[in-house]
Image 1 (tube, rainbow over the protein chains, first blue to last red):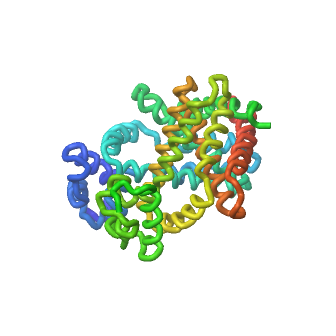
Image 2: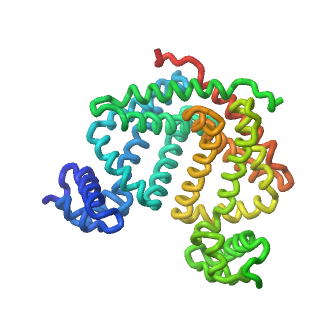
Length: 197
Length: 197
C-alpha cells in the first residue's frame, strides 16, 4: 500500500468510524485505525493531528467552502446574498455518503464530552473564518459577526432537518429554507421595543 | 480553616488565577490551588469538577441569570424585551472585581487550547439554556435559537467593549448599545435579496 494512497483521508475516516462503532472511541488507537485503513501510524498523522481530528475533517472543508464562496460573491452582493452563496457552496459536499458518515459520527460524539468540545472548537473556527471573509469585503465588524452566526445557525438547522428527511433529498433546498426562516424571525427582532427608548 | 469557609469559590478562583500567573496553568495542581486558598483538595472538588472549571464559574452564574430573567419577563414581553431583560440581569455580576479577574483569566485561556475548548462548551451551554427559557415562554424553536445567539453575541461585544473602557464604567449601557447595534444590523438581513425569488 503506497504512502500516498488515494482517498487516504476518507479511508482513515471510515476505518475510524467502523472501529469506534465496534470497540468504542476511547478503546480505539490511532495505530488500529491506520491498520484498518491499510496504512501506518505516520500516514495517519500526516492527515490528522490527533485521534479526535479524524472525526472533524468535514468541518475544515466546510470552513473553506463558506469563506471562498463569500470571497467569490460579486462586489455588489448584499449580506443576504453572501450568506446564501456560502450555504449553496456547502451543498457540494453534502452527499448521501456524508450523510451516512454524519449519522455514525453523531452517536460517537454524543457519548464523549471531549469530542463535543472539539466539535465546538471547529464550529467557532468556521464562524471566525466566515466573519473574516465578510470583513474582507468591507462588511463592518458587527455585521460580519452577525452574518457568520446566521450562516452557522442556518446550516445547523438545515443539517438537522436534512438528516431526518428521505435518503435521496438534496441539501440545498434545506439550506435555503433555513435561511429564509431565520430572516423571517429576524424581522421580529427589529420591531420597536417598549423597553428601549 | 472551616470546610464551609465563606466565599470559598471566589477564594479558590483568585488563588488559581494567582498561581496560573506565577507558575503557568499546566504547572499548577489542584492541591496547590486549594492550599493557597487555605483549603484542601476535597473542598476544591466540592466546588469545581476539575482544574479547568475553576476558570469558568462565572459562566454557570451567567447561564442562570440570563435564563431566570427571560422566565421572569412579563408574558406580553416581545422577543427584544426578553433579550434586553437577560442582558440587564447579567449586569448585576459585571463588577470591577469581575472585570479584573476576567482580564487575568483571558491571558491564561489564550495560551491553552483545552481551556478555549472548555470556554466554548460553557458558551454553548449558556446558549442552550437561553433558548430553553425562550421556548418555555412559547417562543418557537427557530426564534428561540436565534434569540439565544443574539444574546450571546450582544454580550460578547458588550464585554469586549467594556473590558477596554475606563475602569469605573458600568456594564449595562454597553449591553444596551451592543443589542441595539445588532438589531440595526439585523435590519439589513431582512432586505429583499435578488437571489431569493
